[in-house]
Image (cartoon, rainbow, N blue to C red; front, side):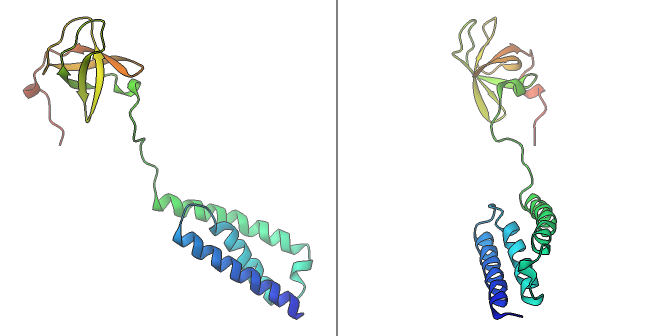
Length: 160
């Protein structure tokens, strides 16, 4: 085996290991995939004479890329499973109940309603006093349209 080929294999192996170290320090950039390919090609190139100059070299690279990609994606999914969005969109509030924090007047959006942990501008077709429980019937842009439920705070089930 020519010393030159062995050096190429060693260089690929060192670069691959270095890329894995970078990936471990700042995960998420998928450096692990090309790093794995380089390490495998480097190790095979060091062991098999003339490997880099054969048509098998790119075939091995492709065969390694596919499972490395799948395994890396599965690994990242276990590290960081998908989470629900951190923002709330208005239409997702329809049907939810809230408490009036500032009186609601018809045809204005000066009223305020707390739904879960967020306060929304609100309107209604009639006056609703502060402290009343309301249900969201529609959302328009950044405000909600509500109707009074007729229930009091003590009649609603508590989350907990």
